[in-house]
Length: 171
Image (cartoon, rainbow, N blue to C red; front, top):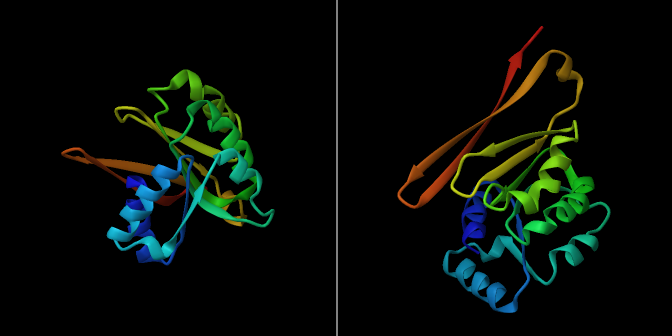
């Protein structure tokens, strides 16, 4: 729920909505209590159960623009395979613990690296954070290249990730 609070606070500013999945009832209830305390429950939908089972039941027309994965590391590849068709152009996938659990998440990272529609960066954080985005493919692509620059600010025990997307003319 801690990451969900930060994401929801940002989404409140932009008019977004957050859906979270918790496997255990106890964690879902605690997360909901924290969301209420922080004043963000009104823009959050919590789901309980297996992430794979929930993702398998997503409606075909469900469109997602941001995903944060911090769950069963060996299942990251399955989450990716289920989510990929729902991600819109420019969507971002963040996956936590990719260096601390490198062997378990290798199929996931290999799948993104092997897919030409994705750009992937692994940030040098204590446990590793993968940040991947779907590249824009449109008429601008022949004149511009999109660059994703990530700046990480560390303050005490908190890490703040700031992303900049900018265009560079290459013609």
